[in-house]
Image (cartoon, rainbow, N blue to C red; front, side, top):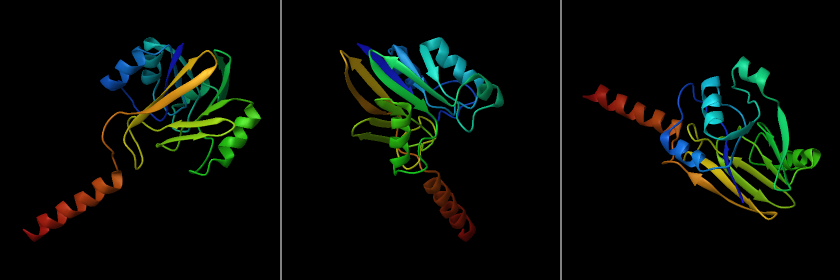
Length: 180
């Protein structure tokens, strides 16, 4: 049995959140679909577990030199593709085509900052973002591969965060302050 922690879009300059570290330490492998942002976070993940990763659009130039745009790996006879940007929207036609092109059974991608799982001929999986989610709670994913079978789950790491709602609330507070 292989336990895989799946991350994307961590967008951190410094340390990983403690809850994330606890989950990762229990995993055999970490797959990161880009946008670490800093080498510090990359090194932290590499110190915690075996790490396979690709670069994201917001990664530092140093990470972009170090990491490929795409990667295919085999875990317990299951071919897994790893990219940052597989689709520009919740329409996963492009991601499905990319999975076929890469000839993988599972395509893991990021960039959307919200969790998505689509099962068809292939599994398309975006783990969301543990730190900057969009219209969803902070999340990551976990896959278990055992004897050629794949199971998994999206793991919520907190309450939903929506920058728009925070912004709208700040306008309301300012307006109330003006009236006073």
